[in-house]
Length: 424
Image 1 (cartoon, one colour):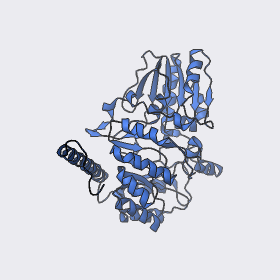
Image 2 (cartoon, one colour; image 1 turned 135 degrees about the vertical axis):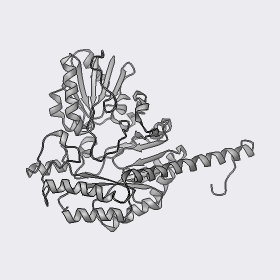
Image 3 (tube, helix red, strand yellow; image 1 turned 180 degrees about the horizontal axis):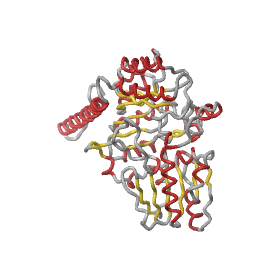
Image 4 (cartoon, helix red, strand yellow; image 1 turned 45 degrees about the vertical axis):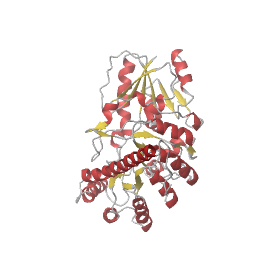
């Protein structure tokens, strides 16, 4: 069976960097397909789709809301040719009812252990309109290594620089943050993969630089520490969402190769200031994720927040405006208050104001988004700050290589027997 798996293109966000990361959802999904399926993957952000190619079945994997309208267009073109189409992924789950109008089937939930049924239904011409497993989550131990072999690796280098590979060590999130849909998508129960399986996958990735895409690593202290201890010998360098603000955890994270974290900054508190300092004290960079337009934000408070970001010396900052994605508390609240101004999903890009802010006009919030970007990067451009952060990982890699070289020399001098160092 020839299965064409497509990742629809979307317009780059304003101020977003040029490079593309290899998508995570499609390669994780591909690992759940049986061996007899011949997968042809197309990332439309980097490649054109050959609609004339002979295929048996088309899958469309959508992660972002801004992908859904293009995903529907692609499906409509294939279905006009008589090719059946199934949708899956995060954005499919957020926009399931609309997506069903453009699909032969939609798959909601996690695919491990479920695709044999779907493919059997396809082969027997009894494909169901909706496979709803969103509340029937499979055993997390079934999650195997992602199928990175389906990627065209050459497409994910940026000016000759090695980009990160994406990997996850857990699913679900015990938090239920106002703008986030993860509790709907993956459940409120934190579900860590068996650590040995995560380490096996990490060790099998050729790329030395990784992005651990877990919603938050700061969910279970003992699990975090156990995971980081097992990661130390791998000598990988990685970025992630928040790590627990505990010196013991941060020390192990640094030893395990933590390069930088994405840390949400919502206020100007001493807690945030000290948290950023502790990351830096452990040699871990910080890219602040700054969400503008919450109901407690005013024009003055947003300007003070930008000044605060410069004061605490963030390595990078990414500014977005509150975007009420379906199945979030933000969407429920703003809908009930009739404050959502657009239902065009292409506008839900996190850099366009699609709702009525509480303390200012939508136009003023849009202006403040531009102000925040310009003010933060006024003295030092985004490119320069990114280069500095990149140099950090290069230094860490050079230190590892130097350590390995010394280790080999010591082994040679002792006729292959490792020497116990004083500091071991």
